[in-house]
Amino acid sequence: MLEREREELILLHLNRNRFATVHDLVALTDTSEATIRRDLKRLDGDGRLRRVRGGAENNVPPRVHQESLVPPVEDLMPGASGPEYRGEYGTVTGPAVPTSLTRDSMPLRQRLAIQEDQKRRIAARAADMCSEGATLFIHGGSTTYYVGEFLQGRRVVIVTNSLAIATRTHYGLGYRTILAGGVVDPESELIFDPVGHNFFADYSAELLFMGVEGITSLGVTNTHSAVVRSARQMMEQSRRVIVLADSTKFGTMGHLKVCGIDRVDTVITDADAPEEECRLIQEAGVEVILV
Image (cartoon, rainbow, N blue to C red; front, side, top):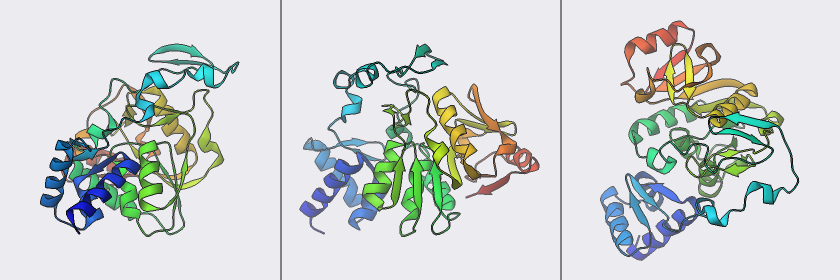
C-alpha cells in the first residue's frame, strides 16, 4: 500500500472512531508496526492527528468535549421533571446531571494504552465465549473496549452504554449495535440517562462483559455511582456475568460495591493476577480464566 493510501485510510479510521491503537492500524493497513509509527509521527508533525501513548487520536475535538457548545439538559427537555438523584456530586432534581460523572478518573483514551497487551488477551478470550447469534451486553471500559475487535465475522448483537464501543463496532466492524440513549460523559465516553430510566430493561443478553475498578473475593467495586447503577441494570438482564479485569485490579477496592463475588460467573484476567486472590475467588464458586 502506498504512503498516501495509508494516510487516507488512517485519517478516515480516526474520523470514524476518534482513536486507534498502533495494533488497530497495523491490521487495517496490513503493514508493519514500524511503518505505522513512522506514519503517525509524520501525520502528527503535519497537525493531521495527535499521537498518544499506544496509538493516535483525531485532533478535532468532538462536540461533547466542548462544554460551551452543549446546551444544558434542562434546555433540551424544557419542563421535564424526574426523581432526585443523590450521588457523590450532591443532589439534583429531574434531568440535570453533572458535566462529567467520572471527572476524577483518567480519560478512557489514556486508559486504553495501559496494560494494553494484557487487555487484548483478556478481550480475545472473552470473545471466544460468544456463540453465533448471541445478544451481548458490553459495559463500557478500557478492557471491554477491545472485545468487539475479536468478534469480527460473527453474527452477534451488541448492546452497550459506551459511545466508544458503539462507534468501533458499528462503523469499524459492522455488527448490529444498539446504543443506550442519554447524556455522554466526556471522560469515560459512557452514556447515562439523566432521568434514571433503565434502558436495558427491554433487552435480554446471554453474556455481560463488564470491567471493574477493583476485585476481591468479597466482590467487585467501582468509584462512580452512575457507573455502578448501569452495571447493575445490565446484570439484572444477563444470563451470565463475565468480569474482565487485568491483574492490577486485584486486591484493590473502589468505595462503591457493584455486586458480591457470588453474582459473577467468570473472571478473565492475565497470568500476573495474585494467586491467593484467584484461589479465594475460585473457592467462592467463580470460574477464573488466566490468559
